[in-house]
Image 1 (spheres, rainbow, N blue to C red):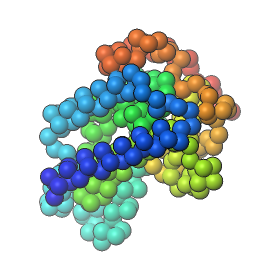
Image 2: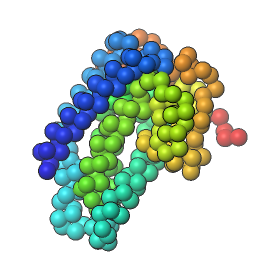
Image 3: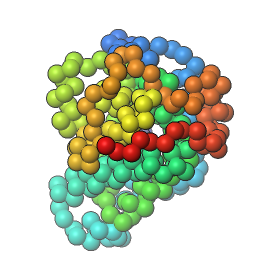
Length: 271
Ligand SMILES: [Zn+2]
Ligand SMILES: [Zn+2]
């Protein structure tokens, strides 16, 4: 199952990536997906991230969940609930956990240094969905493995979550212009590209909103939902004020970025 799962994930990832990349060129909101060097730099990061995960984390999330299942370790394995309850519940808990992980990435200065690499992209297209610093990827994997151990999350839930996480991140970063009514209907449950684009705004109050990865419910529930950007989404500047030079966007500069001083102005106090 594990070998099949890796092949299946790669196939699903490549298919969805190609489809979204074609769709955002065909129906763009901003034209951010036009070929440029930033896509090469983002691809460079995902290659480094993938190699790091293979080398530094010999136990992958699904294999860990399967071995916990076999030994009856963790909350869900102890409870012994049927899969139709425990699988959706575990997926929901994992999604809630990454909502809070993402929110803390913005609030804790040391974590922001890693996460701002994702935000320093001056445009947003499908490649932004894989633009994460290796330190953030390693930290996220460590947290995820810890959480799976505590929860004893069913292996099936972890497979679903892993597939949804990688594909969902591609979708929410695309430059696809969805019909407004469709966008609004989807947003009742899911995070859409328009909703996530607000999170990539240069305005701090907009960046500090819409933290959800898949389900929009967490932002509504925890008061971080923002329906519309202050400026027109087709023209609003994206990225961070402090990293707008061409040299800031090179692969080596992105890898070094967490070590650079945080020159971000403090957030305004909440109203
Ligand atoms: Zn963020
Ligand atoms: Zn993003």
